[in-house]
Length: 103
Image (cartoon, rainbow, N blue to C red; front, side, top):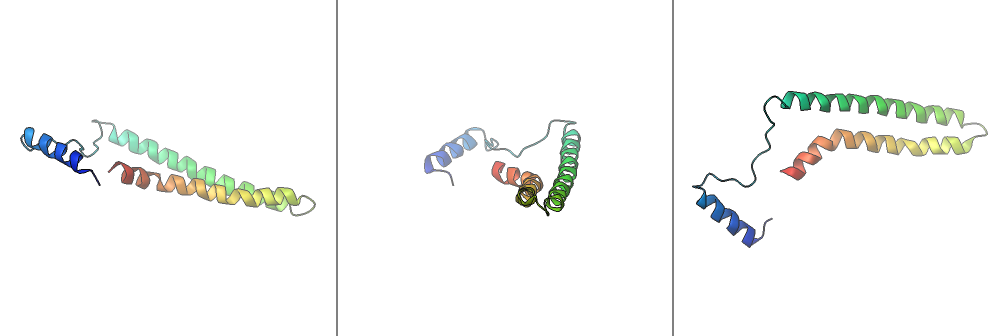
């Protein structure tokens, strides 16, 4: 993944620091902040669930109202369903995607 020059620099720094230097350490939370961050993430996920439920309900209501003589509204409502699912999927996968990119 790294070029040979980058690996050589990493190896030299590792040896120069007595074998204890790690230029890419694991992420660690500052003291006392891990529980706060977990709480915020949980609250944002809860808000996303409520927004997803309301979004799907709005799409369903739009399809019901648009059934007769308002076919454009029904079509717009149906087109909104994939956007709701895309938003929910992004929220659900966010932690995994960010973790995979960082590590």
